[in-house]
Length: 596
Image (cartoon, rainbow, N blue to C red; front, side, top):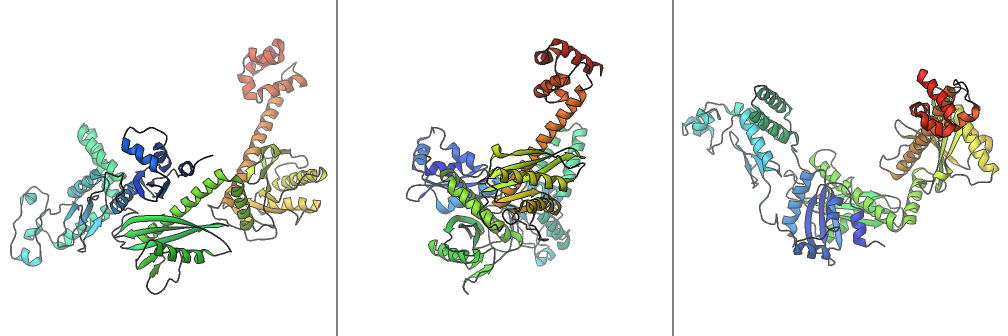
């Protein structure tokens, strides 16, 4: 029997993010970041640690929480935010007041651009933070090469420039500045350069990359390989440059973010707290549905409870849909931009939490997992009963040759391979999918009825309205219409068709119901294609062998069983064939294929 901690580790996602270790009293022990959460956290528990402090910490861990983020850079920044906010006992790094650097476009005439660790709210623009100083230096070098901007801290007001208060410095004489301090460069020209730099910092530097690559090739052609390598390093940094972080955005002040993900029996509400542009807390709670509550009702209850539990006082709340939370709180439903990104991050964490919980249930209580999926399928597909027994049909042929069909069977949402069946098409000539489907469906259920075998609750036909109508004719002929639910699935848009309904059903692409239907369809296709290939290969082998003098029907059957295809038979040595049919016939066969 697995311990709760082992279950938590086993169900962690393989995504970048931040993990948090808690002891039995719920106290935060450690915060770490990972490119792959499952691998990183597992490494703490599958080896003996040399450092005593780490060994002690691992013994204290009772609960593991995690926050999933889009990139490894975001994981670095979020780790920094959480450590500075909560000061976990076993974190040594990042507990000081130092933060990652920003690039600042100063709010002043003839704006300066420089790196800084402090954000001052004076109307200046800040880009970052950056987890790599190499990225900061590369961007500053790129800006310096493309646009000669000033580096002095003079107050370049119009009055000071007109009075001749300042003189140009060495930077002007060596070509790094155009001398705005003496009026040699207009404010309009200078600020147009600043606007171009702003676009570069937002990540829009395709033209700059083209220029760098052209310069790199020219240097390499001139045998200046060291200089070319320096340019290549800059290109690599810029190509991996992330212009905006999801977990740290100075444009967003203090907001609380709530999202909800639900299924038939449970709802999962994720909450993210943003303070001064940085995520400082994330928490997901699960709610058991007692009645058929809507997502709106559940989220409203969860928002009130979580704000009370964590003492939240933010005036603005981001939600996926409108709710009335009173006059003291501003509710925002973002559709685009930075706030939408952080709302999507919250929803992503809610989905990952739900997946973790379902994985744990699947391991601990498989029956409960199956019952939940069956109930969900019944609801999604509007079925009269749970589809414990599902069968799916698919046709396979190439230009009408060797037509076959396949029937695959799922029981309790899982493949029951011993019940799979192949069908050779007997009554249809030429490529006619509709007639083939009608034949195999009739044969399948006529036999089940004759043998008094249980019938499925759901039949899925791989195809659109035409194949579905053909299968329905067979059910009518057998008197099974209305006793078994039948539907068709079209491949292009995953449209689900019901008999007599011209409007298809579209399921959520992430829903478990659609995934099971897709699994059925793919299994039927695989099973049918394999049977078709075997039949085609055997047919080709038999046709080929009929031309060999002295080889009879029994020998053909023996060779078919052993070699399966013409390719294998022609590639086999005379000795290998002799082991199957004797040396005399083996010689005839090898000579025939050799001459051919």
